[in-house]
Image (tube, rainbow, N blue to C red; front, side, top):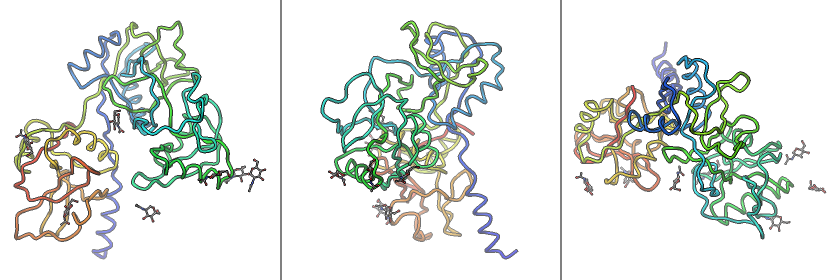
Length: 373
Ligand SMILES: *[C@@H]1O[C@H](CO)[C@@H](O)[C@H](O)[C@H]1NC(C)=O
Ligand SMILES: *[C@@H]1O[C@H](CO)[C@@H](O)[C@H](O)[C@H]1NC(C)=O
Ligand SMILES: *[C@@H]1O[C@H](CO)[C@@H](O)[C@H](O)[C@H]1NC(C)=O
Ligand SMILES: *[C@@H]1O[C@H](CO)[C@@H](O)[C@H](O)[C@H]1NC(C)=O
Ligand SMILES: *[C@@H]1O[C@H](CO)[C@@H](O)[C@H](O)[C@H]1NC(C)=O
Ligand SMILES: *[C@@H]1O[C@H](CO)[C@@H](O)[C@H](O)[C@H]1NC(C)=O
Ligand SMILES: *[C@@H]1O[C@H](CO)[C@@H](O)[C@H](O)[C@H]1NC(C)=O
């Protein structure tokens, strides 16, 4: 085969490997109350399980299935009812800019829609058309001409675009209003919701997988979340009292920020000795996780497992893959590196838009190790 064609085919094959590991879950087959389970997970792993998305949910349910937990009604995860019930965006961002209509928000509704450029609370079960955001950097929006409830609208946006639209300022509000005007539609779901549920590890994942009619806080004592193992609703979530005794799922953080200032080679050695390796960032999902941990760094950039293979002027991840998902800062990663000078390695900025930059390997930076194979 022609060598170039072969190389391109190889690239395509390599680039289609997706990031499989998201959260590392562990099913603990011992019956404990939610509170005991939380303590156990915090001592032995990171915390009770947090679920970020449909993939996590599927992985976890498969794991529970293969763990043979026996005949139990529920398996605990880390979602708990809190006293706070603040409005927030589906994306996990806090709602700072608010554009409520006069008299809003009122009542006990937990979702928000837009009408006449202003926001109103609405029962989450109502069927409305909705608007998704379709790219992160660019605030491009997509009007979906189907009516559905808020949760299904959220799933649709996450499956086909990015998320339900979030509105952070007057401009973004006008963009949504303009799409509504152009589509001649008077009410749409936006990504604003509130619920009193909170993850044990304080993560702001807005993913929920409630069974129909749940959470219902039956008897006013249902303040924790169990994944149903009962016929007809296996894998769906129920609010139940935290005092019940059930098996549970813990998770372990996969990425660890090490706040020591080391050269790239020293950092590599440290990660391989104490964890698994320096982190490789193959996907937007992994970049999002990296973004979450680098915010706490004490250096302006943080080493990644990214190195320049001078002979071919190619950037490679330590895991062996070439760089498919790209997040370089302008001017970095593309121009040929001068190989006669010091070797270049890849780091991620800890502030700004957390892009990747190329730095001499003797720079002393914080770094991120991964904890999974
Ligand atoms: C999660 O919430 C915190 C505090 O409200 C906020 O600073 C952070 O940006 C949120 N995370 C994401 C991914 O938006
Ligand atoms: C936004 O998206 C449009 C169309 O996809 C593209 O032409 C434009 O360059 C993007 N703008 C930014 C700032 O990314
Ligand atoms: C949408 O239409 C309303 C009513 O015609 C108008 O007042 C408003 O300015 C329009 N908004 C945008 C952003 O085009
Ligand atoms: C939305 O769908 C309805 C009915 O299917 C159709 O009449 C209407 O023109 C559509 N609107 C847009 C903006 O596509
Ligand atoms: C917009 O919708 C209204 C009522 O829903 C209808 O009377 C009007 O003809 C529509 N306008 C266009 C341009 O489709
Ligand atoms: C690492 O470097 C940063 C920035 O120069 C500094 O603020 C921090 O204290 C250093 N950390 C250690 C552990 O030396
Ligand atoms: C790499 O990106 C950084 C941060 O944006 C910038 O300061 C630097 O000039 C870039 N490097 C090159 C070679 O353009």
